Image (tube, rainbow, N blue to C red; front, top):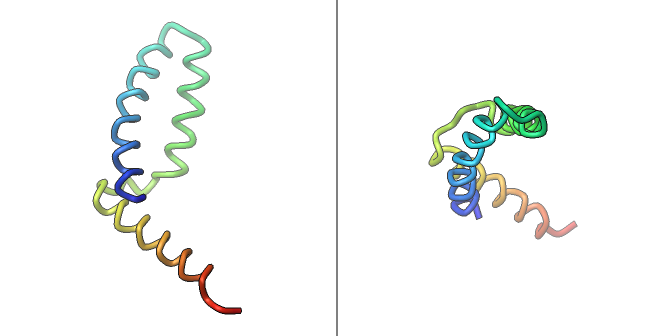
Length: 72
């Protein structure tokens, strides 16, 4: 799942550049670009390389899965 997320974010990054270019001449695109920028900064403020983010995400998912399966 972590590897898939890295792949998806990598491909989506190109779309953010297109959206930023469109924002220069379109008010709707400008609003969407502002919203996307705010979310990206909140989600990826550490600016980790993809491999480091994948490792962190994998560890978090593993930890969450183990908590769910632990007996109460």
